[in-house]
Length: 175
Image (cartoon, rainbow, N blue to C red; front, side, top):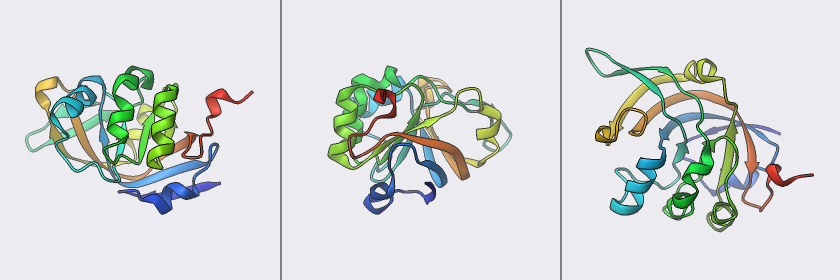
């Protein structure tokens, strides 16, 4: 199935999704990599995580006179976030976008929190950036541009594939 969902996500959105479905997102998504995940665990998130979509990405950003312009954004390898992701999911995150899948602890947290892991295709940074309307804000820029949390306003961001769902299905483990 193919779904167009608006963020923030809720349980009704997630209940529809099954491993193998295609998703397009409209609304706000937030980039977060290793350092941001670690700081979220240690210090708390700089925003309410309820219903949030986190994108494992280190965008290429250009500073402008007023604000920022996103040049390119693609998924980074998600397994680097394995030490933190289950705890972050427990804070209310409903979807994680990345590549390469995640560990059993994260899969259990997806089930426990009624959340999903969405795979973004590597090498499609130009395609994904075309779905971004605006960089709304940045948090924790002291971590560096790729590691900061960037709030992105998106329209039909995707295609994204549900690869780990809230029903304990994982396409990375299918034979």
